[in-house]
View 1 (cartoon, rainbow, N blue to C red):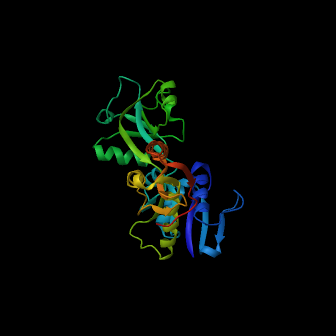
View 2 (cartoon, rainbow, N blue to C red):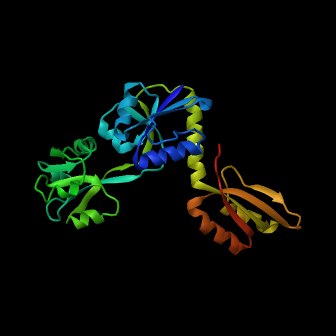
Amino acid sequence: MLRIAVPNKGALSQGATDMLTEAGYRQRRSSRDLQSVDADNGVEFFYLRPGDIATYVASGDLDLGITGRDLAVNSGAEVEEVLSLGFGRSTFHYAARPGTVDSVAGLDGKRIATSYPGVVERDLAAHGVTTAIVELAGAVENAIALGVADAIADVVETGTTLKQAGLAVFGDPIMRSEAVLLRKTGNGAPSSVDQLLRRLRGVLVARSYVMLAYDVRAEILETAVELTPGIESPTISPLHREGWVAVQSMTERADLHRVMDALYEIGARGILASNIDACRL
């Protein structure tokens, strides 16, 4: 039976549960459950602290785990990414008071406060910079005002919290993180992982595409198909109305409204978009 670690709380937990459910796997009934078994699919799920998952996977006791890329790197565990899952995205930056530090090189010899020392150490090593890292459990933006650090390294979303603390971001992002599926480094995956990956990739595609259907005159079909090429090729069916055809094509969700507008402008009608619940490509 395949053994998979899943975050037990927080945004990563909800995102992982939603994705696994969409992929056809039974999840725990209560947030207090520590394990659940999906016997029909041959999978046992273990609900663990997100920051510990990489360590459990690296030990070899669990086959796979879902957690954040940042948490995996921060743990220092010997794990590797199998698949990026597209949720739980975050970006890490350095920040300091304006006019004090404005580059990663300028951090040399300084004190940096962070909740992710492993992430920061890896980035600083890549830049050849030596600092004193002050590890804090949270609210690191207060560290400079309280005199325990010269700069911070943290997740930055809108930057509003930093501005309120009188800080400004500098340098390139330290890391762009998201939820990932992990396995032990160099560990050959069991054959049962193939089905899991097909299902998860199917969810990723289903979330990124819609099924677009429309009617169009036959003489402008080629122009319409250029707008909606689909994955392999669109499906074309003749309509009862002579000279018209019906078209179905998978279309990227992010581009949907631009494509619908363009189709309407060339004369397509009955343009409908529907969600894709699951797929295999």
